[in-house]
Image 1 (cartoon, rainbow, N blue to C red):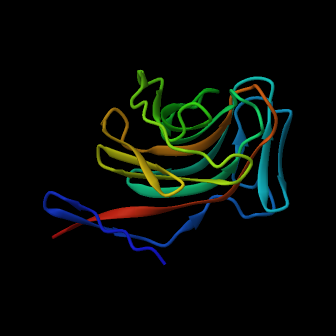
Image 2: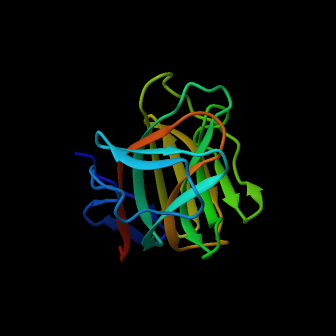
Length: 190
């Protein structure tokens, strides 16, 4: 079991229990914002296929959190997906942050409706295998990891709370997600 310890000025961070965003059997709790060709639960995975940029979001909203998920990308050289967080907007496209899940900049941070690229560092993907993505957001600090290696760390306070989502950018095959979970992080006085 991993334990998370973060010190921020005069606060320490405690974590709550993990919350599964996917029950492994159904798409319950996930809502496509545009029409997808396929969005289904299959073999303990969420499968998403689209010909256009599509977001599928949850109603779960958090400010400070740790989230992790595993993703299997289709074998397409320019495939693009993402995991969104701290999102607002009831329109088709979320406004918030996104960890890139693609072959060009895996683990980089993008501000959806918040100014574009926030970091362009990139992690290393396992080809034709599952890849583990992790995000920790506390206050204005956001950090990402890909397959256990730190990729991006930024400070940005344009949006400090919101819902979560997954994306298919519209090119390539089916992207598969599993083990999507998060846990709230709670600031405590030191």
